[in-house]
Image 1 (tube, rainbow, N blue to C red):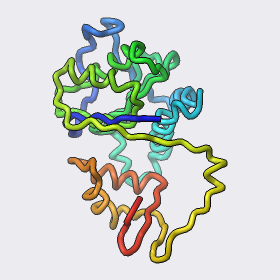
Image 2 (image 1 turned 45 degrees about the vertical axis):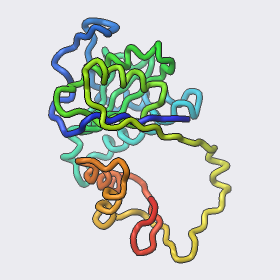
Image 3 (image 1 turned 90 degrees about the vertical axis):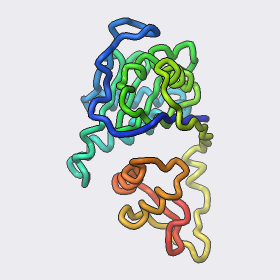
Length: 237
């Protein structure tokens, strides 16, 4: 199950939505991005991605993550950091194809249940309506079938592409994984990561290290379930 990450230049922005909603490749000249702010709607959107499991698990778990953050925002240590998190769809229609864009500071996560490139016009339109006039977005965790939609916007807007990489994902049913023996070799310790002591090292070693990535890693450690393999320092995570 392949997914691909494509990146242009990246930096935070106060206004992720473009002031213009027209485009020559538009399904409608008046199309616009609309925010999905109701948690109940986000749950319904997420559940659309259960179909044909695990085909759409990338979109499902992406939404799970951000729904969890939104539901727990009052308990999270850095609530102010949530102000730049927004979830959009096109023309208030997420029911027909599950289309969503998650804008989290400079990060962009996209998905749609439509798999064929000929059906990706709505997704490309939605991506094009974001404000690409500032330094750009780090676009990640989307399926390879949606790569043409992303690259069409890159070419249309003449954006610079910093890197374009493919990640291969493998799936194994939970009931089979639970039967696997999990043992840590002698001299190694398995325990959760510590943001205060581990974030800097992980950020330095991460191949996708970039401006702002330490904040991303620190937040993932603080807010999500995680695990590291240690000697004196984390060797794997």
